[in-house]
Length: 178
Length: 227
Image (cartoon, rainbow over all chains, first blue to last red; front, side, top):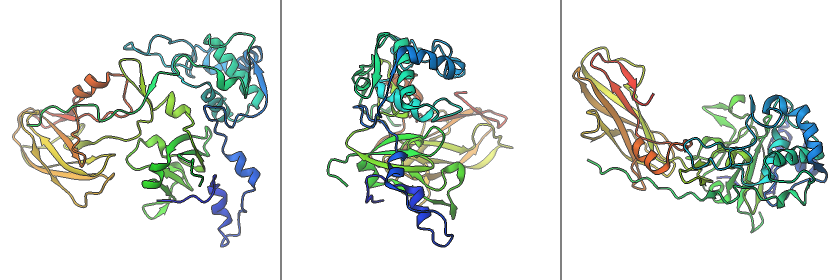
């Protein structure tokens, strides 16, 4: 059991600050605490200012993403990012951003926190918006002329938005016990 | 804590800053902030200095190198709870937030890769666990599923913890299959692999808990039936 006394618990910093024995560390500043959590909610809460276009994203994708994901997001050592619509009910489902991901905000969040694979955190917010715009465009989800920003991105309806259901378990009937 | 808070967003300090959404009720009931294990600090590869542990739940929710917990009124639909760790069913729908690991068990001796050196009396043993409470019984078959007998359970039997089971067994040199099935305090019985596939198809693997069968050959070698 644990208790929270603040909205954000800056754990590592707090532990260091409470370590007088070694004389290291200091309490984190409110700014540092705010910067720690970069999570973006599906309603867009947490999205920063900035904007990116499909065209900008195409250029950025070629420079930063294509070497792992392929020039058109067809996949290589990195995950395939396009296609797969209509395959989820088949024996070999292809789960991509376009066929499976329920929220476009998740794409922004994940690119921002984890991509490029070898330099996560490299991209500035406008670049993340641009990369998201391009990947959505590759999947036919937004038109070429669209601009992604904190207002427009949460309004994008992903094709598989309604494809998720709550946990119904226990769902498996055991065979009669002998 | 504000009254609207119902979820906890946990983030780690690894390169991809692992993130998961955890219902506040779970966090208040049984989650741990682990700073030590086995009398020493949590090791770097295990999430030093602090790791979130959600007992009984899929391991991916145990965020390593924890740097923040944010209370919210909604889950954040992280990549690792939508694209990954959701369970795709044959009808094309995916189950989401299926955190709990249902009852499972495995015979650890004799098991795949081992060899019984001769006919004779052995102590068959293994482990059982359930994400929904404590283990109340483990049944073992040594004749390919024709008959099942209750194994002896080692105390203490604690909720959300491994339970060791044992059974004396005479290997008579005949080719056979052995397996165990766990029953937890909710009455849930560990299902067969076939029953799981019948209910969920073959594209749902994160919470696979089917009965584990080992094949014991007449010469004493033990192999994995499903491999």
